[in-house]
Length: 393
Image: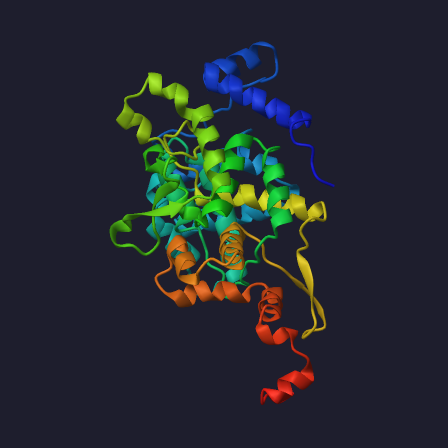
């Protein structure tokens, strides 16, 4: 059953809170919430700029606001084992409080984290488990040691392991897209997430292309300049928006950032990141975006709108279907082709260097073949008529 949009209390609360945040700022809103007992305590800072790896490990295990404290006992057991192995790799024994006094910031580099994860003899599943722990560790203890930008770079770089043989993501149906958009309006930061999802399905962008600034958006001409994959020095290219994406983007920018025009210069305002969780100072990380979309997909699966398993007649069993943020890009391409758009135009819109990359989308939906063949002139001819044309039946 379709969700009620405007009438849902969660949606109303999120919208009203967003209005208050934009009008009075986060600090003032939190202060008032604290005064009436809604926010009981302020989050502690888990570290300082000079923290050692051993001190960071102790904070991770013991501080109230560490991610370690919020996970299940079985995950805690796994994370503590991973913490022990990680520290041992750098000469620190957390059980005996023995340390080389190595600083946390010395080990949190892309090179050292990559070397740790790529140790010989480690299975892919083991590397993924270690990477999951390291994300929770870094997010818990590195806030005062590294900038948010550097934390994002670690999460999206050294800790982002590629599937050795990934199943290609499946595209969403139009009904599924509509449902996901409705779900996004019930999330925290609803307007931002709703607009972000619209941009994904309405431009065909990759996730890492969402790190654009306000000055990159041209609503009148309907395009956004992004740093394209594989371009020399990451030169910016245009990605064109559908009308729905333009409408969502216009409302989001006016609602979220227009008040800052009074306190920032035009240059400063244009340099704000559109999708951010700190008022435009840094862009959302790829992982944060993927986590948000994954949450929507999981909810849609629970509600029966998306089926994550299909019957494979060749194998005689159900197989799992892979949905991800990239499914939005696939959906954009498939429906563009289905509408009759020239494949070379679709190639330009997606930023593919080779037409072969675009042609892959012709294979994603088996039913597309049947639709195509049904439009063939011969599809209306009877078998005996085909024989007169010299065809073998």
